[in-house]
Image: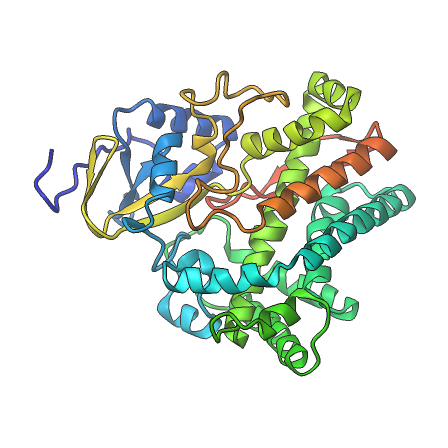
Length: 414
């Protein structure tokens, strides 16, 4: 073992590794093969970006990701869980996202948000999901669009979030445009330098709209989530304007992007695995839940989050030093041969299925896990019941990204 404060590094083999942008432009099969190689190593590998000399310990096994997720005092989220970490001035201007915070600040915000999700609100959201799903399939049938992502997969979670938040219909398309601009820089960076520009201006405009709605709801509360968040009184605390904007931005990633991508991958998986589709439609009631869980495992919408070591620690035989970075690769953990027999097989009857599609547990386990599952189940039921032959007609167009398993478009027909 290394001396205290000294990290033993296991370098990746020559060639692209997960620390390099080029790795995320490789075919999915090549990426999967590299992660399988990393899982086979005795201890977590240290992956270095040769351009910067910096890197991280790659946590690619299921057990390692779970341990890091459930030991928040050692593996901390601040200053940020994404790559690159948010600059201090960005955090000051736009507020801190919950995913980038540790206790007690994280627990404080989570209590406020959890208190806002009342049983009445949850019941209303479930009704909204059914209504919006039916409307989307009505429109799909009438217009017969070619792209499943824009017409269906992206539309459902976005409309559900907007309805839940209480965003007026007249403002939704404008916010959606700003989201598209703001997400331009969340793929793979082409260089080390990221210049603040259109994306940050779009984020500022979007959060300005939400802040204005928050001020209006404080004066005139309604039966929606924004009202609940800005009027909630949890130990004298409620969300301020910047906190509300940061929470909405988080919802758009955690509640929209992830569900959108899971639905798109799901349609393609059911198309390319006709025997699994036949199994599902033969008993939709019994197998729909299992199909959703297997889509989440197999497609893993969020690829990675990073953590920073708050103290020296040993993980799976690897001595980690205070200040070291580790990256939790959820997609790799979901293909861990030690946990999932025949992990590269898409099997909707897989049981048990302890996938990490919503994180590895601990205080940062996804608040929207129930919502995402409900959206997927309701929409897939609507599609497979009313349009039983709906299918993808080509490969999904993927956006090279080290953060999420993003589908730009997916051709479909029925």
